[in-house]
Length: 391
View 1 (tube, one colour):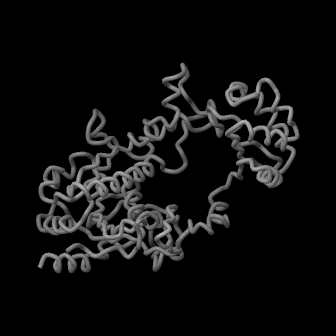
View 2 (cartoon, one colour):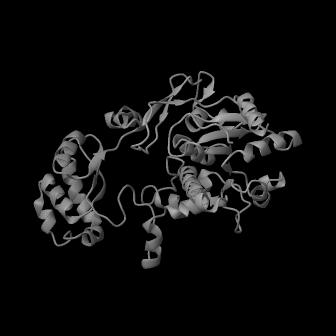
View 3 (cartoon, rainbow, N blue to C red):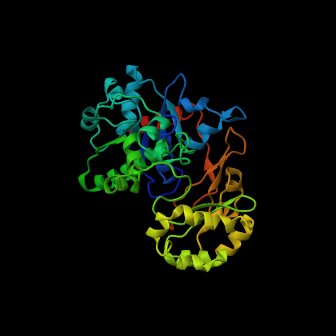
């Protein structure tokens, strides 16, 4: 027998996740798993709970930050330093499929939960250890937050304007990337368990994840004598692929091949750009990017953003406005894709959060989600379940 299934119907329905994480990377990972149908039981510090319960913005007495990352989960407060509470935690692990934690390496081991002990006692349990730098290597014991791994992982050196100050990516990509890789690792381990009937450990470092998303910047280090740096909004090896000024703002245009560039030149009213010897192919356009950009900007400034977007979209050229977050949440396409969902009975009144971008043909994509739990809200129901299972 096992714990009851999640209320959410999805491909991971029937999987129970014990979530020992807090703040962002781990909770983001378990939020993804919850959206996919897993039951997520959040184990929190009895005195304070997840740190993010105290993070703003606040509305109606609750943290919108916490609610947006922990919707649809359950909460039980357990003191892992208390022997009696550890018995309850062990019972929970016995009937679960996945354990996720984001302590510094060694912390959970000192509480009696080394991977070897966990695997011996709960051989089918999958264990994801998410930390700043992973469990091995010279940095393993260092503390980390998103800003630290963005800086050390190179992404800040690529972000911003040429000659500008180091710039953090506006979203917490250090945490979020780790959360996404964590969800991938867990689903892969669940698939492997079907054949082995054994759980495994997944060691995930936030810094590793930042290196993994450096894309072609690493290739450029090994193939050129140039260390990549910030170049604003343009692409380092595809041209034109950037933002351009209009009479009332900016738009982005992405010409990923010659045909699109020829069409773009026609739309600009200067088809001769396509036959200019400096711009005949992508490599030449990138080599002469400053000259080409000056010519493009001279013409894009003549019309408004909406005029250009209408013209370029009609020609089949990939382009778009540069939306602020208010414009994103007001966008009818975002609404049509159900990418803003409401939380049912949420303490932050009428709070909307980002929806699930994964749309499955077999499963519904509801417009509402269960709200985030109060600290220790589900203790009684979880203990009753465990009593019934262990009787």
